[in-house]
Length: 171
Image (tube, rainbow, N blue to C red; front, side, top):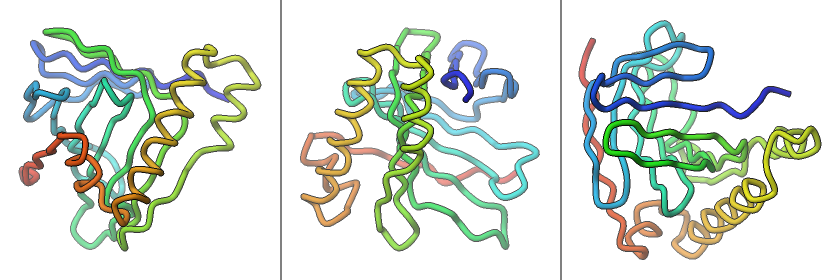
């Protein structure tokens, strides 16, 4: 089992460092009332062209919308990571807590990577506080979606959170 993925978003340098994977340029970024909104290309990915994400520290969530390459079917409408999000004026740090909720293209939500979460807990990769936060965030997402007919925007709006999405930039 791998250690939790840590992402560093440097708003001054406009880069996204993903653990040992690499450093990628951020195309657009803005700090919003509820977190950080950014978009970046996904160079070299076989299926995905761009990712656009909202980091929501108060909810311990990262909500991502992936844009596929032309001709590649999308695997999700939204991918929601349970994560700790540490905001800072210039550098935001996100530590993945393994659990995810994937909203499929047809709108069906699916709890994802429970096996990875269980293994990470067993191997001691998460602190007790991180374990608690991951479970509470997943419960909040699943129950919020259930209460709003699987509509992410409606659930977030009930919390007075309104996510704005940019269209991907070509190239």
